[in-house]
Image (cartoon, rainbow, N blue to C red):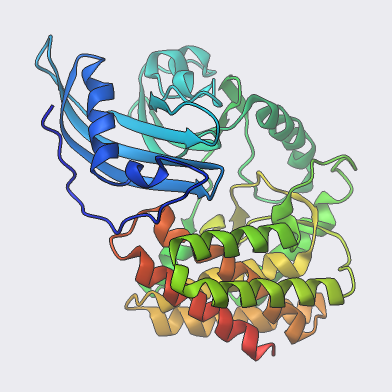
Length: 405
């Protein structure tokens, strides 16, 4: 077992309530993955941490990209291995797609099984995994008969049933929505490709952008057209409201990962919670739940929405704030089109404020909350400079909170 890590990442601080967590991102974690593959007849030559999902004191899951060789056949292999430790439980490891919480993932990534379940049945299906979050969801791309493209989204079976039932109701809205059209297995949904390009791609390319008023109008239309058809018992989620628990969890994670920023993180969480508790409850709308530039597809004069997993009753200003926060973080990351992105953000903020008849200060503290939630993103993707990037995003959150326009 000669596996080596190709990236040297900043170490994870010791978590006394979760022994072994820090080792997963260090040499010991790489070695344990190599031993895991060795037990399956694979000789690992490279093991690289690629993602980390962490709740201090409770659990840590790390996804590793690997390169290995099958000892019996000599064939190369590139399994994705997830190592997970949970408080009070033995360490667990699995290879993609054998996720213990996503029983439909193995079927959704098997071209033969997918071909059998698609209607009309294609002659050839090619599968390309795109995104994966352990125990939560995965997205794959299907190329059918060499041309047509579909997407597969895998969630827990319970959530999959809810999304399929919800899709049947939403087809009558007349909106361009990426709704599941069927499933290949439990929680393994099949979705069409929306025409056009993600707004994010247009922003980064410096291309022609939709009028921000049209984007704000899309949020209003989502509420008006979906309200009559959605059942009143739509499952709740903390993503659609400003949840104090979410702010506290973000502060705890930042404090654990960046001990020197603990006081700042605590102050931001305290300020956001104070504003939330001191504000009137917002009028409840049907909201997207995770609205930002990559969820909006632009096809000429037509806009569409993808990733509707969290659609339901919630705070419309939080959707607007989430969109604005993502643009701020995207612009602050320094792409060549940064000035245009930040300018578009200001225009979009103004459009949302007019459409929602909202107080700028009410939007600003929600924006701070959303930027605060995004602060841990560089750690989640294990960017080589995640401590600095996290600190930069925390600074952004404090700046937005201090403005409260």
